[in-house]
Image 1 (cartoon, rainbow, N blue to C red):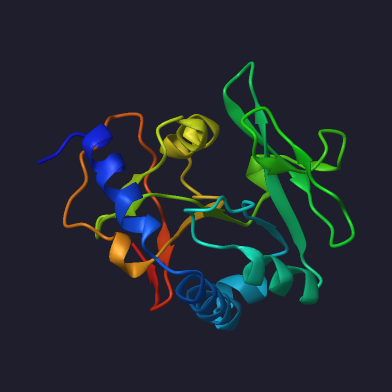
Image 2 (cartoon, rainbow, N blue to C red):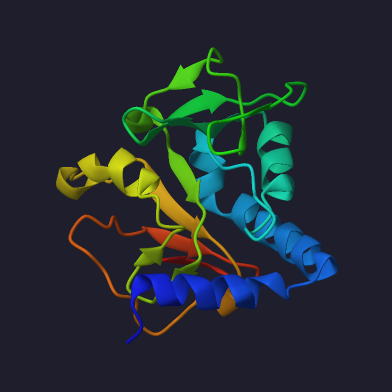
Length: 192
């Protein structure tokens, strides 16, 4: 089995060959799958992320959240604690460049406590059938949702977002890694 760094390199190369048309079609299909699910219908506070070039596009999902008149939150990186805060993102709002050159809402935007979020769509490089996720390596999501290890209610639900081809048989995991509750791809929404 490859270590996490080797896997990340291989997966980034694999993601770089997906065309813009394939990305757009996958994003629209995933948004349709998500919005038809009872999870979306019952959720009020949904956190997403503003996708980077290699990540699964969130544009269609963010638009669906707004159209359904739900609250859309995006992560704001806290450099000091190396965790994420979630700030409200509204359709007319301009995003600003954050600490890691990722677009995010202004820090002064209305924030939501992580425990008050219903669903968090999580970026990833890979996932497996056990709900394990391989992220970019910063550990922000794992630190932010570490409280979930002891949370019986499992709120918020953590749903990975990625291409079906990002699935691998088994990922190497560390004891601080937080598992996903589900996975949304262009093919299906699966719960673990």
